[in-house]
Each structure stands twice: as C-alpha cells, then as structure tokens.
Amino acid sequence: MPTSSITHRGRRRWWAFGLVVAAVSSGVLAGAGTVRAAADLTFQRTSLTATVSDATVTVGTTIAGSATVQASRAGVCARDAAGVNRDFPMGSARISVAGTALSATARLPPGRYRYFSCLLVDGRWYRVGADQSFTVATSSGPSPAEPPAPSGTPPTAGAAPGGVPLPTGDLPGWTSVFAEDFTANVAQGSFPGPYAATWMSYHGFADTYRGGDYNQGIISVQNGALDLFLHSRGGRPQVAAPIPLVDGRWGGQTYGRFSVRFSADAVAGYKAAWLLWPDSNNWADGEIDFPEGALDGTLWGFHHCVGQPTSNCHWFDTKVGFTGWHTATIEWSPGRIVYLLDDVVVGNTTNRVPTGPMHWVLQTETDHVADTATSGHVLIDWVTIHRYTP
Image (cartoon, rainbow, N blue to C red; front, top):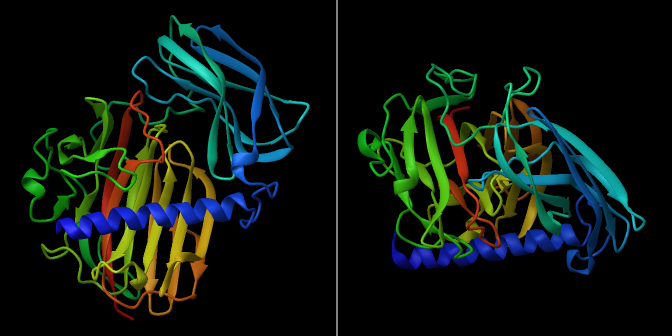
C-alpha cells in the first residue's frame, strides 16, 4: 500500500469515528438516553467494595451522575496483574443524580487485581474514582454455567476452537472463493509464513488514531486460531490488520458475503474496525464496517453513505460484547447490505450502497486514547468469502 494511501486512510478513519461519536452524543441513536453531549457529563463514586470467598468475588459500587442518564453498561471493571481485562458482568443501568447501586459476582483465577467503577454512556467509557485492589488466593475453577472469556492462552487443540466448524461450499446466491481454517501453526514473528499466498497485513506504520503501530509480528497461529496479541512495546501499543487475499490478490471484488468467527479479550484502549474499503482508496466510494467498536464495549455496524461518507446511512448497536465466540457476516449485494450476527439479521439497509470493488481488512487498533498498561488477545477461528452469484 503506497505511503500516500496510508496517510489518507488514517485521516479518513479519524474523521469517520469523530462524526459517529457526535451522532451518539447528540442522542440521534435510539436508546442513547439523555440528549446531552458526553463532555457535559461527570460522575462520582460514593462506594466501591469487593468480597472474596475462595475463587468467587462479589463487588459493589454506587455511581452518581451530574445528570440522570441511561448507561448501556455500568458496574465494576478489573485488571489482572498482566493488565488483562477481567471485568465483572454488567448490564444497562439508569444512573441517577442521587446515586445508583450496582453489584456483580464473578469467579477469577488466583492473583492480585485492581478494580474501579466504570460505565459506558453514549459510546464513551468513564472510569470513576481511584483504583482499589483485591487478591484471590485460591481457585476451584470456573463455574460450568459461566465459561471464562478468552485469556492470554490460545484455544486448546480441536477442529473448531470457536465451537462452530468452518462452513464450506457455495450458498444460494453466493459462490465460495475463500475459506481459511488456520490449520498450520505459525510462531509470533513468523507470520504470514505458510499463509503468504492467502494473507497479508499492515506493518510498519501508525494506526488510525496514531496511538499504536501496525506490527505483523504480534500475529501467530496456534491450535486452529489466528491470534492477535495486543500489547505495548517501548510505550507503544502494537496492533494488527490482517487481510485475506482472494486468488492471491488484494481487492477486486464487487459485492460478496464476508464471514468471520472470532472472540476477544475486553482489552481497554483497543478496538476492532473490520471493514470493506474501496479499492479506489476514495472514501466517497463507500465503507462498510462490521463489527466495529471498543473491545471492552459492544459490536456495532456502520455504513458510510456513498458520495457523502462523513454521514452514516445506517448504523446500529448489537448490545453484544466482543467476549465469547461470535460469527459476524456482511452480505453486500446490488442495492442492499445485510448484517448478521450468529446467523441472525441485526442490520439491513438499501440506502446509497457501494457499487465499486472493495477489499476486506480485519483492522484491529487503538481506540481514541491508547492504554499501554493493558494487553490481551483477539482470536479468529475461521474466515470465509463468497462472490455474489444470483
């Protein structure tokens, strides 16, 4: 990719997300809560506690707002000694001026943890109050009813680390042109290795927000999954953007069905922006994003209007987090874009749909303000691409 294209693309993504945040903050999105700019809000923590019993930790907090708002997620965030997210289960909550009490329970492995009150309002995370700490001395293992989120260790060996085997063959209206199950292991620092004919990645330049550096050296393949190890080196977050190559080349496909089976740690300071980007490198020719969002937030979908890309012709929040295994699919056909999560339609638009060739980039990068203290993994079980053949 030419240097001039890289520079242009970085600017494009910054402006795109800035406009999305503006739309959310002004209450344009359904369910966004109070019509109030995020910058106007402040929050106070009046209590924060943690009770440890064996491997079970129960936390409680009370959060008050400068105005009553609806938080899409609120509760207690935690980090282990390595900086990996171990957030407690959270749901939506109405945060009042008088204060809203929240509590949750989780089972954690042995170790020392720092924890703090946190909430997500209008697409923005707030970290409330100073960090505190607790220690889990023993562990009897996770409850069968609460399987753990992916951790620093790649999945165990098996035909389908994500629980769903790689789908193969054609589908009605779609012809298979690419299918990757990651059967050959590749050590960190050796990617693409045996995948050189079918994969490439961004490498050696800053990401969209200039907070991290694209580094294909953090990509590996182990036990049937592509592993992006997000972490910092020398004070700079290391990020990755693997790109599948259809017939050994980048781009050249107009319309298609793009599916990925994935899971991620809820790593603060990082986001996914997995997108279809025009081969022309002209943003006005369109952009389709799914999933997009902070890894410690929820999966969003976006469609930037052809001819007016600073506006979104369609967007939605699935309310589903990145942790746990999910399959995200974009079906792009003449005059229509359909978004599916785990084979269920979550978005559908016919408004100003792209008509020129695009390529798929699994862009995983820093989010607004880089967090050099956190680390974690994004795991990709399989990837498929189909051509539109009505």
